[in-house]
Image (tube, rainbow, N blue to C red; front, top):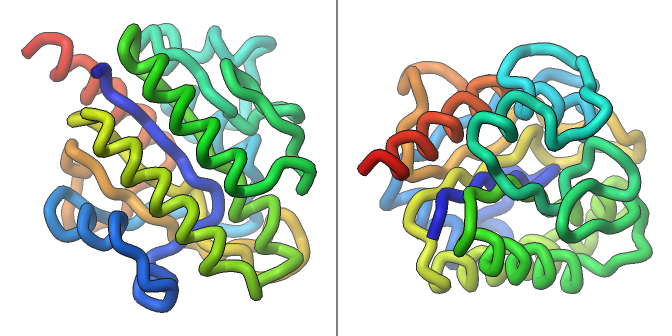
Length: 215
């Protein structure tokens, strides 16, 4: 399978133990991990454009498929929240109309099918869509995502970056999240003593695709 970049909007390391997850903590202990830094206010579209452009900018191409990272990697896009509804093979509205179970399951199944043909850039938006308003279901959301990632890994994925472009929601407003997200990947972050910046995630995925395809 081709390399995968999967962003999960609005999760943080702090809930891994609280929610008694299985897959994400195990991955964290056996491959490279770090912390993604993104200061408030953090919005999904601006955060993802920075990743797709591989530079700290909010410039938005008319079509996400023309963004530098996508053109360089020839990646297939899945559920990318740069527009509403999301962009890619699988698309949902950025409201609570799609359950977190349905989104996680459909994103993973779409990734598995697409990664047999090309690199994949994908997103799961459920924490952002649900947890600003209802923190009481946080562990339910995390558990569903954790199980979905387990299914993805068991499908045969060997080269991947899992990350969150910002941390957990900390209030009712869309741009309010913790400043630090997760980075768990089969490619090491550039500076082990520093945080990972959003534009670096795009660069790291470009490098992961290059190294995998040239091996």
